[in-house]
Picture 1 (tube, rainbow, N blue to C red):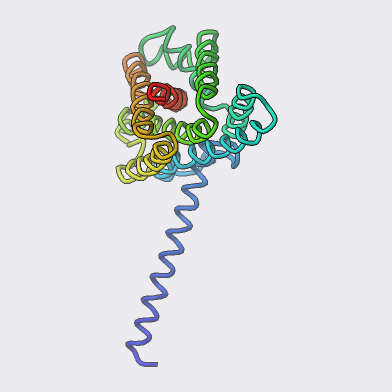
Picture 2 (cartoon, rainbow, N blue to C red; picture 1 turned 90 degrees about the horizontal axis):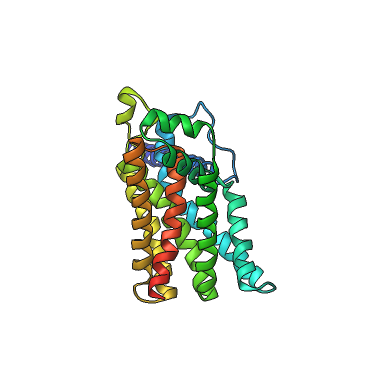
Amino acid sequence: MPAAGKDMLARKGGKAGRMKDTLRLEAELFRLALGEVTRIVPPARDDVSEDLLVRSVKYQPVIGALVGCLGAAVLWLAGLVLPAAAAVLVAIVAIMLVSGVRDELGLSVAVDALARETGREAVLARMARGAGPRGGLAVGLTLALKVVLLVSFPPGVAAVALIAGMGLGRMAAVHTAASTVSARKRGMEVLLPGVTPDGYRVALAGTILAVLALEFVAGAWAGVAAGIGAIALGQAFRIFALRRLGGYTAEILGGAALLGELGTYLGLAVVL
């Protein structure tokens, strides 16, 4: 074979190898994100690098939307045999089982600590004790509002709202990690980003797709209103946490995700 032909084959082989390596890396990043958002796979081991965890964050809104798809499917199936309120409740329970109730637990712990204490060390110490009555009340009210709002929507809109809400909720957590320093890190570690710039753009693109689906099903301005609601509630919680704690924790991110989801439904209810 001529030398030029060998060089061409070598280049093709090199490109194919790099493509396989890229696909393996993205699959691993997706798996890491899946472990952070759901109980479908185990969470990341302690020996997984911080770099990989940060790069995996970009997939969280897409995974959130996929979990919302599961909830939408359960809502549709349950709606065939159950009243609307019961079907919505079953769908929400299904989502909580898949996600491991992480966001609900995060909101409960965060609200209880932020309501009782001020200052990073005091809030972190309170968080280490677990959830309290204030946090339980916050989660209960949040879940009750979700049920009431979803029941008020037409069935098709409620199903798509679950998908958009889960995606926007995870995006609220991503934005909190991107725009706020970690409260648990010390020294130079504080400068490490919670999400890369490219990862943020990927996360935002996936979220926009979920919002467009809601816009298509629920009509003009539905997606915009849902997005505004998610941003408003998620950012309000982020600012509150920043003033009391000076940064974010895993509990804060879970709370931001749950309140961002609730904000989606509140914004949608305004225009429907």
